[in-house]
Image (cartoon, rainbow, N blue to C red):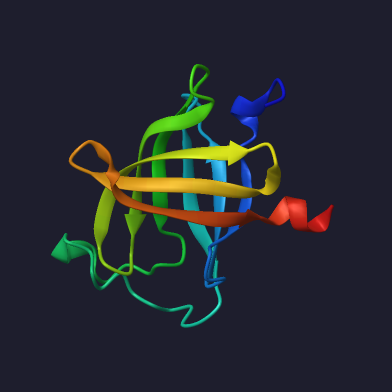
Length: 132
C-alpha cells in the first residue's frame, strides 16, 4: 500500500446490500469511527434489537456502528475497534483493511471471543471511488 494508507479510511461507504451509507472519520485522538448517515428504506427505523433496552427507541440513522479503530503499520489494517450490527443488536470485535488491487472496496471482519476465524466478513463500497 502507498504511504498514507493509515489515513485512507475516512470517507463515505455503501454497505454490501446497498441499504445504508456510513461516514467514517478520524477523531481527535486518532481512532476512526463510523456512523450511519443514509438509509435506503425506513429512514425512521429504530434500533429495536439493541441489548440496552433504554436505547431501543433511538433511530438507526445517525447511529455510530464503528468505533475505536487504529492504524497498525505492521499489518496495514485498522484494528482494535468494534462494529455494531443494528439488524441483530450485536457488537463484534473487528478489523478493517484495503486490498491494493481493489481500491474502491473496504473489507471488514467482525469476530467473537477474540477468535478472528469465528466471525464474518463483509465489504463496503467506497463512495469516493465511485465518483472517480
